[in-house]
Image (cartoon, rainbow, N blue to C red; front, side, top):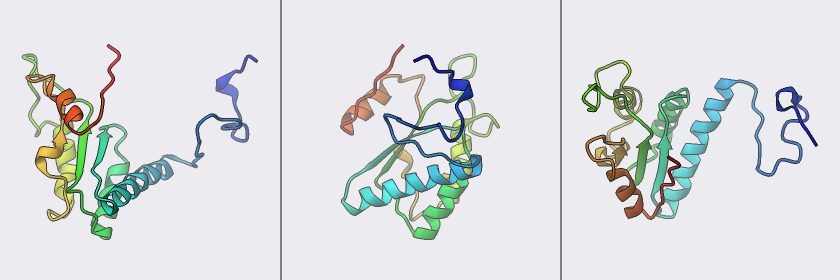
Length: 154
């Protein structure tokens, strides 16, 4: 059957899906669901003494203010969390741009997530990971040490 994926109605979307699909009303609802999913996963893992490892994009970012609020309200410890960010902008000499730069993903996460979470709860600095252009193998080594595998299709 040849299907035009650009013409699927809301009613048909997800019918016979091979993976669960949650239909949401707008981006705000989507951001709330992402934040809630993060919080629920951390709570579940904390309860059984297991670490939580997330890949955290800087784009979209609407989930982060909600996540911060929920973490602070619920007094949710992030001490056993590892946040791996996906990228960072580089200078011409292939070094990270300054975190003070508006485009810096490290700066964004610090300004909008880490400094807004109660210091008693926040992810430890050594567990906030960004790909390092000076040590490209570090990411894979860290993931391996956490019992995770990184699959790259380069």
